[in-house]
Length: 115
Length: 112
Image (cartoon, rainbow over all chains, first blue to last red; front, side, top):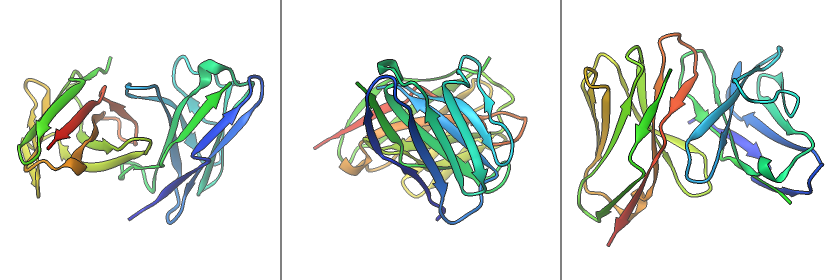
């Protein structure tokens, strides 16, 4: 089946630094990727929709200057958490689909801890 | 607005059936999904149902949809310890695309 891979799976950083998380579709081309944030024992909150070759669409309340999303190719989207703070610590998950309305495949998630 | 609710926790004995419930508010949902999340991992699609169906069975999994009451359930027959995980229901709206609204998640614990 289709595979979506995230890297890194775990990252620890100091406050004020920036962290980049990659999301790759390994065996299909993804025109759209989605980035979610999951708090402990909570549901997934959609942060933004990443469209290949264009700007990401952010959900209400998500700071686009803090969470930079780039979808440079049909197989790669990146989420950069800029000037990270401890409250940005969370589990970030991406998903991708090969076509509009098709099945979504999820990455394994990336756990960010900001000290 | 869209709102998807689930009970937080369910405990069952191995071999029993598990029923996980979900309620949603968007009557125009087109597809409804069940995902499984194991600790520290991403989401795995278990099954889905189209909104004009009321039941779907897939091996040990049975999905029931009551569109009038906006109620969705997932029944797992012969529950095993490997079924212990968090289960999320999700809905897709009528606008197409892949934007899903997820429920709050139900943690299933299977005891010996």
